Length: 212
Image (cartoon, rainbow, N blue to C red; front, side, top):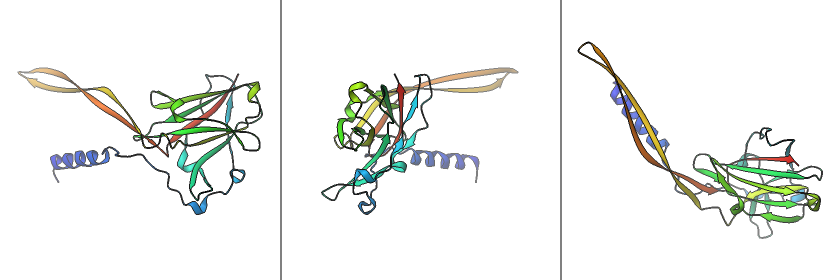
């Protein structure tokens, strides 16, 4: 097989691999495996750090660590339950990381020690910064009852998409010899790329609590 044919095949394979998504990614759930009560769900620890300059913990993949909870109507809700630890003044920071045109469109529930709901924060409160949607929850003395954080897909956001346009510049270089002289030529082409992210039920996330 000649080099030109190999190059053509590699370009076709790359085009197929980069085919854009046409819908949000969903969490595949078998309701039979779901927990009957939030009391039966194991909690992951939230990493506490002393300063903003400290590193974020390694990102987690929601679909790998989530548990599903069976609802009264027979449905299933995927969620991640996280233990915030003893009461303290904290800024709880959550990053929802964009990957392969998918971002977890998460809402946050704050629960007390008995795992009862105190308040919720919808996905629309998150702000897009670079390659992630970020949000913070500030806890102080009046929030002493808050013990757990729940991360779950926000039904009001899932299925939507976010699009932005980014400029792309590509530089091509060539070297040739003419009349005994060596020439180098640089060519720059500019184009626009559409960056699309589907608000989904799966995706990568990070959570940490910064002590105040």
